[in-house]
Length: 374
Image 1 (cartoon, rainbow, N blue to C red):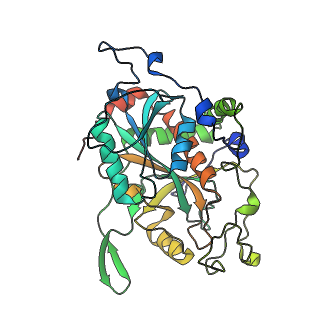
Image 2 (cartoon, one colour):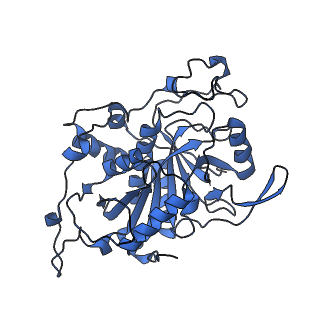
């Protein structure tokens, strides 16, 4: 039998990510203006028609939004549309695998479940035909003997048992001392996404993933740009998992290099054949706090059966049906740093594009429109 996280090796050819993205990439990427789409009877183009957008993509960080924009087949930079007075979001609109996608990011420096919920609700004020959402970005991994999670890998929320794929671990009531009883549960992702998830897993198993082709197209788009290094694969030597009981030597300082840490405390792991990210499916833990303690990580992972930690999903699952996709940028311990964030954001966005390629636009329209204020 397969384990609950059902690991699939995604042979993503991420050479373009390892070479890096440029500051000028998005200016040089081909932009589809409103005139490129056929105009409707009211004189507006399809790209300008807010009712044509059915996928809502939410990010927590600008670097996650940049990775999402990279994956768009077309970016509608010049599209003009009327935004609801109560909507304070800033959007990127575009086309991805036949779906019109609206991308929004949380306000700079603001994180957590409540801000994520506000961004989603504001999106629905303006774009009233959204059928489902994607929450795509970075997260902290919870590796274990059963789940060989590495930096740059991808974790996707998938219903398991009584869980809808996301567990809010700070939701409940304090009983006594350190005992905490979690209450309630979060909804599962929409049927159209779960169906596409199964289809995508099957394609990966028989080596027929479309993702390498998507990334090859991205290479062609950015070859004319001057490259930078912040989206590159960071190398096996910079992927170090320390033993649970060993903390960073100076908890008040960054662990970008961990030069002062004892390398004899690094967990020995079997080398992979290549650096391509592996996709893991299972429960994702969500709360308004950052987990940066290996003992807490291991305890919650064992209690809840989670393989990833993040801070926004719990604010969306009830009223904004979505799938959560996280690129692993650290191990949720005291050694966490920002070195892997850009690369992890890009691998998550690449997976999301592959997923949308398996969702028929006609099936999306069968899903109910997400009601504002639901």
